Image (cartoon, rainbow, N blue to C red; front, side, top):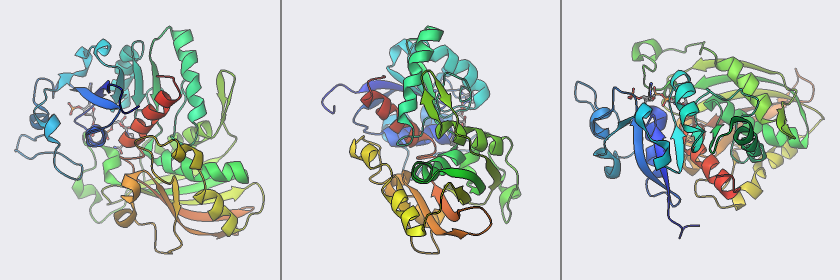
Amino acid sequence: MDSKPRRRVAVVGATGVAGQQFLASLVNHPWFEVTALAASPRSAGKTYRDAITSPAGQLGWACDGPLPGQFADRIVIDAQKLDPSEVDLLFSAVESDAARDLEARFAPHVPVISTSSAFRYADDVPIIVPGVNGDHSALVKRQQRERDWRGFVLPIPNCTTTGLAIALAPLVRAFGVEAVIMTSMQALSGAGRSPGVIAMDVLDNVIPYIPKEEEKVQKETAKILGTLSGDRIEPLDLPVSATCTRVNVRDGHTEAVTASLGRPADLAEVAAVMRSYGREFVDLGLPSAPPEMIHVSDDPYRPQPRLDRTLNDGMTTVVGRLREDHVLNNGIRFVLLSHNTKMGAAKGAILVAEQVIAQGLA
Ligand SMILES: NC(=O)c1ccc[n+]([C@@H]2O[C@H](COP(=O)([O-])OP(=O)(O)OC[C@H]3O[C@@H](n4cnc5c(N)ncnc54)[C@H](OP(=O)(O)O)[C@@H]3O)[C@@H](O)[C@H]2O)c1
């Protein structure tokens, strides 16, 4: 695969939090070459460096490490003017209102892998979590047939859903899961930069409400863990009671999860199915895949965002504090940590693109 010419990709929303992470993850990618950077008319015509520099002169590069030189002087184009025929694949990282229009313009021509919610709930659109429900990607053939598209749109979930779906997937398979209660402590970068969370609001504080987030977690978790049956996805019958909060952490969503299993299971068994989960997927050797999907820690003080979010470059879900719960039937409890801009956004979307290419769908 490495000897083939790299595919030309566009990043739409390249100046935002997720878009920047796309660029950081695509530097020297063996399969993809970024040939177009697009954003709103506000950024269009500027060099990338100028587009992310504030009027006061502050460079707004939010990823670790310096702004990659290969992008700094590239001219950002207006996403409305991007010609999809000039790329082989497109990564979309814009808010859902803008995405609804833009993705509908691009998907007739090229595969669009999206971080937005614009198409997530359409009947013919799966929500893909790499290593969990790659088989759902086959639904893009229905999009192509019924919408008469050459491309397709393939969204990843909301970043809070990603870690939850990954941690629950092995439990669903091994024991069944009857109900889930989850409280999230979500990082600031999850809110993006336009306008993002105001520092004065979150310093020394916890914000107990994130609009639309809890509904997304419920709906998306059931869809991801559902079954592809013919030309549609049968959502898993799984009630998820979510409370989503914003905390003063830069990156990494922490979630406290209580799950009612379908049958009794001891904790060693639960830890074992989590640790071995996704082995076949990992063994495919896709460039952005982590060496383990779930890392289970026995240290009662882990996971912590500052210490654990960079494990395997933010692509592994870290689970800790695994213990019994005596309130729900066959209850277990744990805390998980998932990197919201890596597996939960850009690098997760890149891994989805790698997976659909490996599946021969793109
Ligand atoms: N942040 C995360 O952790 C995360 C995780 C998973 C999914 N997501 C999803 O990813 C998407 C982007 O989120 P974000 O956090 O990166 O937001 P963000 O930091 O606010 O960035 C928004 C991006 O969209 C561009 N944009 C805005 N309006 C546009 C328009 N009309 N046409 C073209 N481009 C436009 C902006 O360009 P300008 O700079 O030119 O305004 C910017 O590049 C959202 O759908 C979000 O829900 C984010």
